[in-house]
Amino acid sequence: MPSDPSVNDHDIPEALRHRPQPWLKPVGLAGAGLAVVVVAAGLIGRGVASANLKATTHEAEVASVELISPSADAADEPLTLPADVQANDIAALHPRISGYIKDWKVDIGAHVKAGQVLADIDTPDLDQQLAQAKAALATATARRTVAQISADRWSRLLAKNAVSQQETDEKTGDLAAKSADVQAAKADLDRLAALESFKRLISPFDGVVTQRNAHVGALVSANSPNDPGLFTVADVHRLRIYVHAPQDVSAELTPGLEASVTVPEHPGRAFKAKLASTSEAVGAQSGALTAELQIDNADGALKPGDYAQATFKLAHAPGAVLRLPAAAVMFRQKGLAVGVVDAQNRAHIRYVTLRRDLGTQVEIATGLSAADRVIANPPDSLEDGETVRVAAPAKGRG
Image 1: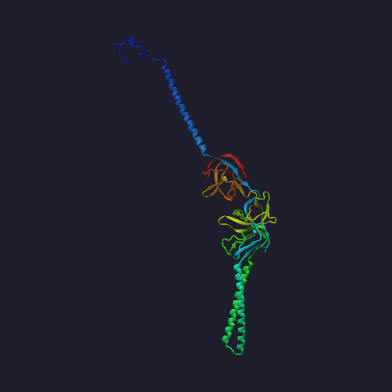
Image 2: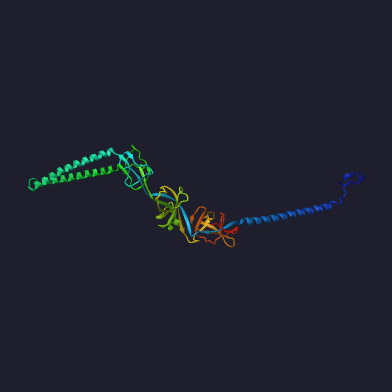
């Protein structure tokens, strides 16, 4: 407020008088110093935080990996494959003639011998055809006899010049025609007689009846495309067991190789079988080789149609095949690969070929050695030459 010389200081109220305060200056200086300290502390804190963030970001960019060592297979490696059990011989018996089932003599589970009658078929139509064929043969035979007599007589008359050569030739030709008629009639009779033999359905070999579709009075037709057969007979004294082996072990499956066969209905029991032959060809669709095992089944413990497992022992040199967990394998554009780490903790992409996929584990054929340090679960972003941080020491996992 501007001073007015006409106003006496005594007339100014005490509240409106301005007097210098001695404590204001120290307080102001202290406040300014405090502000400087706060600003400096903030700048230092931000610098430290920025440095920590940079360090943390750099550390986060280095992938942390766990290392494993490939494990080598034992010298004798078991190979277990699913197998199909089939009878040594199996036959579905279809009717060769049409008729009605007169009776059936065996049921499923019956052990039969070769030539044993399984069922009889009643064939009234065929019986009448057979009778007609017999009559036709008798007629043809009689006509040939008459032609034979005429031809002989004309031949004698020709010798006496009593008849012409033309007439004699006609009688001789008629005899030849009648003889051909006899042969045709006999062939037709033999055909029908052969069909008559199929009225008795017989077993083609020793075996077991595994299926019966014959019922008394049922009409059966020959050459029916949807006919399942009246009986099915299987020779089970010896069985054939088929397995489909991967291509990579096909060279080791040679005739004479022994296998152990197991089935669910006989837990704990192993049946010994021998490899008899292979298809000598790898299936285009399956990529597998079909191998046939043979096994004696004198006690009938195994049954055709069984689901089984066949185990082979394949010999390998120790360390020849390396195994890794399936999670260690990466799928890259150039093929299958694994990540390995060198002594400087740098990752390298190593392309490999698989020998066999075992599900949770894979067998490595080429591209890897037992001394390599392999990344257990490599990230998809792993690049060749990338620096990594080892989270655990190399440890074999089998």
